[in-house]
Image (cartoon, rainbow, N blue to C red; front, side, top):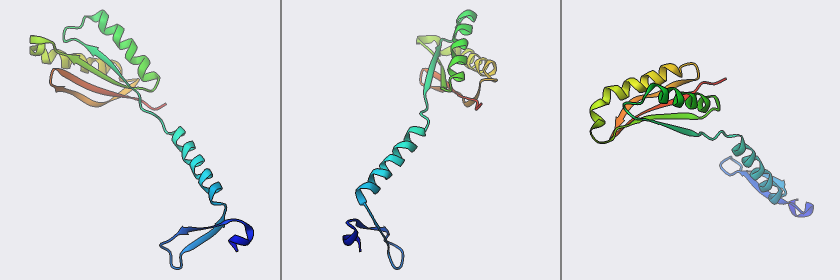
Length: 134
């Protein structure tokens, strides 16, 4: 029947009993399938991660400036990775770094929620903030 119509016999589900086949144009079927996959892929959201770096003794003005940038990033829908970088002997100010990150989380509460609390990894104390859904 497929030969008479100039089409292909395509096996749809080989595990069924009896196996299910369909008469169709196989090249057209593949093309439509690729098109569907491409459309789904384009709709998938890509997660952007923006970073903001602080020192353990960051001044209030610098803090406010960086907080403004963090607000903008979260409003644009990007995740935020805020970290305090400890250089040399400044690692003794771990508590100050944690206080700074928690203060940032509290100030950005209306724009995003904390995904990961401040955690020390080597010479960095890292915290992730995800944007709130609109």
